[in-house]
Image 1 (cartoon, rainbow, N blue to C red):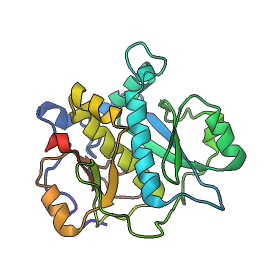
Image 2: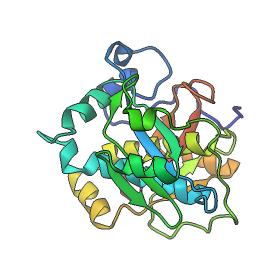
Image 3: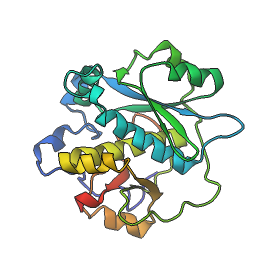
Image 4: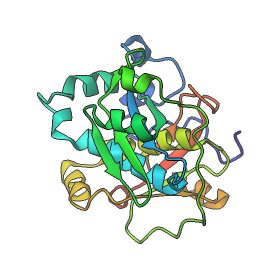
Length: 251
């Protein structure tokens, strides 16, 4: 579903250097990235029957999990995850969210990765794996039908908090939205300087996920903030603009 404010004509990932735009990991058009081996960043959200997490908290926790993976020393230099992260970022940037409970969650926690806890949500992120090379402990976890609710509308984000704004006219399942929140956080991370990244990390990666109203979305699309334009592998049409990352340092 796309409306009048869904995606400005010709919009792509914001960058001061126009060269990367033609080969952005989020563009829907074919690019050189499609020729590279394809990797995916697995995320698993814990959803127990009796106490499922709240939707907004799950989205925010997933976004912080992606930031924790990008910032982890094992993902850089000669770290044990570094080559997998480089291979993943050289191809299309894919994230897949699956759900687990009980013994499934305990098996997932035993694998190398990072667990991030929110107010009600737990999300574990794992180093990237080949598209068809998921660990056996994760491959059977469900990916479709992951839907969550908020018991009440989320409060307004605190002043100065980075906000991942969702397009009000592109509905998504909770699993898809968690992946999109991760995309938005990753774009903001790429745009920040090393000093700005350190400040965000030292503060604990505060962020909020909110859905913009149509007027606010239109303003945001003109702001120059990083914007996710989804490749359309699942659920939504290729080229749909889904999230704008409004980080105070990027204003």
